[in-house]
Length: 215
Ligand SMILES: [Zn+2]
Image 1 (tube, rainbow, N blue to C red):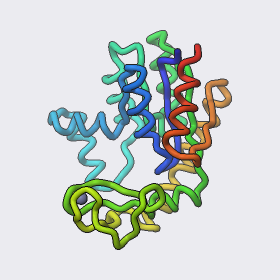
Image 2 (spheres, rainbow, N blue to C red; image 1 turned 90 degrees about the vertical axis):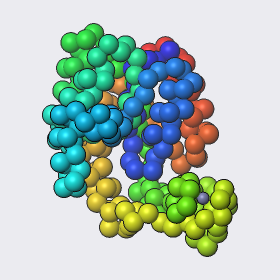
Image 3 (cartoon, protein in one colour; image 1 turned 120 degrees about the vertical axis):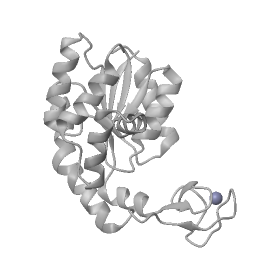
Image 4 (cartoon, rainbow, N blue to C red; image 1 turned 60 degrees about the vertical axis):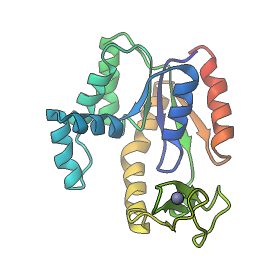
């Protein structure tokens, strides 16, 4: 069984969902840098305050900060599932060194692959209930922009940050910064590319079958 796993992929590829499903199925701790930093912020640590200043300015966290929280979280763990980290090649190189020092090599890096067209369709089809916060997708759920929330009857709307412009920016960032991380792990023989167009359940079955196998 594979125990040290990284999930990479563009926005809306379902990394977070798959990390949570696999983590629960195989009893492997899972997290993302965003989650780690939210916990630090909630606890009011120096790292958390540092992270806050970047978020407030709408900036990406610097490598050093991302690495610090990951190192803190990894300490004492032998198994982990990381969602969306490392985000840049320099983070990946530093992370490789961190794992080498701990004699904890990665078992596999999954690239959840999705075309830009499909990322756009998924992101722009996302609707959030203004009353209960439930999230739907016009692509997967039988709803349109005019439907009431199936759970509470509330009004469904696109989130303010799900705009075409914001999405273009996130996609560009992904292609320039994160796509090279996949190449980095491919060069190390660790990368497996999974086409996530078929949807959550099929993708989970593919990942599940592969994780069960020895590293
Ligand atoms: Zn609702």
